[in-house]
Image (cartoon, rainbow, N blue to C red):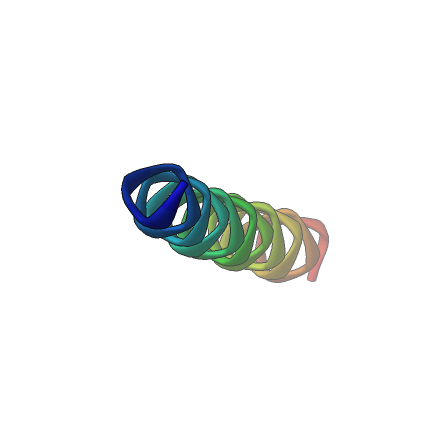
Length: 38
């Protein structure tokens, strides 16, 4: 039971970091598109 809580916590942490990383990549891509349009 205790080990499953740790595994769930690690999976949650990885998932949050992954979504945050992809959001930053999308923002950078959007900024590059804006610069290209200018």
